[in-house]
Image (cartoon, rainbow, N blue to C red):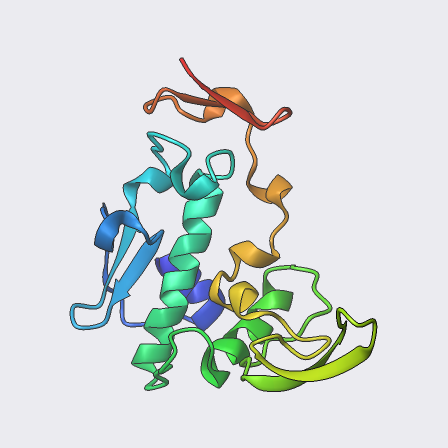
Amino acid sequence: MGNLNEQYWDGSLEPGGIFWGFTAHGQSLGSYESWRNAITLHKALVEPASNAWGRGKLLGKKFAADVLLHEMIHQALFQQGKVCPESHNCEAWCDEINRFIPLMGIESSLIARPVKQRRIKVESVGVDGKLTTKSKVTWEPRPGFMSRSTIANFPHSLRSHSYYEKPAVQLGKKSGLLVDSDAATERNV
């Protein structure tokens, strides 16, 4: 944490605990608990026993470091008093993404801004062959802006898979999971 803290926040974060373990219901890659200033990283990030979260071939140290960074953004916003009511879909979170993109060397033409519900016009052809226009409420981002999913899954959502992929021999030493990164297939050994 000290290295990322220095690199992205000039050492301003109050250091807290980083634990390997299980996250709530095993659904999260990591979590930040402000009440104890601690980050928990799911142990399957580096020791997958299966195709965890459908990302088996991507898991490893680089992926875990990005999960840690994601949780440290939550930590930073909390410690700076910038609480996001929707966790990721807020100005403060988006400002951090926009600040991080060039610092991390990520190429993206998209801008992070909270995605708000809006009405869009949808045209369709009815059974009678007539063109009709209806109004639909959507969470679709405006052109040039990131989707809610991209915002919520930063930085993974903006990294190419090749950034994380490793040769098969480096994955699964302890788990028995072997991922052939060329064929993207899994098999137990």
